[in-house]
Length: 77
Image 1: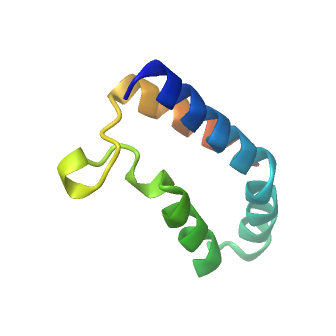
Image 2: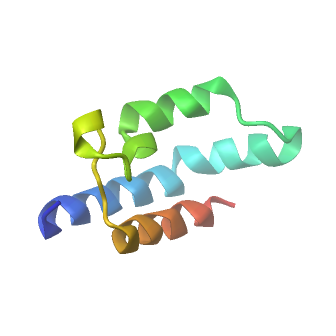
């Protein structure tokens, strides 16, 4: 993935984390469960295929960029 594409992906993750993910985090903390709607959104956004190989439909991110995105996701709560 080139730098511009990665930067766009980082911005999409930040937008998600600062927006809808906050509501999901509250629900998760109160119920102790992740509802199916959250998984659907993560799948639609492509966030569940960040490290998967391209031949399987993934983005095949290298470890470093992948971990940086996970760090961004972890700031949801």
